[in-house]
Length: 80
Image 1 (cartoon, rainbow, N blue to C red):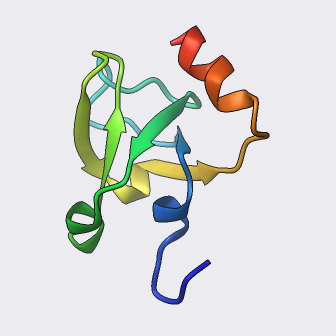
Image 2 (tube, one colour):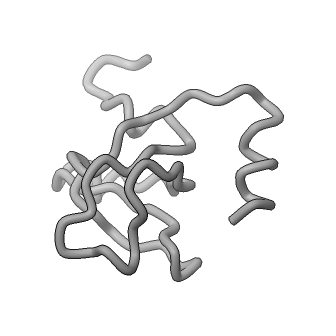
């Protein structure tokens, strides 16, 4: 991992650990695809493809990055 880069910025998926204010858009304990966004990261946000199928910005503290086996991301994308 590069110095100064958050674990969320290095991961392609993150698990939702808080959905305060967004219960329809974020399901607790679900892994969501992330889209790299350096500007959002600088502001404490992460770009997540949520339940709507669109990418929106959410607070970084709502998510925990996960490292998945190479085949898992495709399986997760098909399941969403």
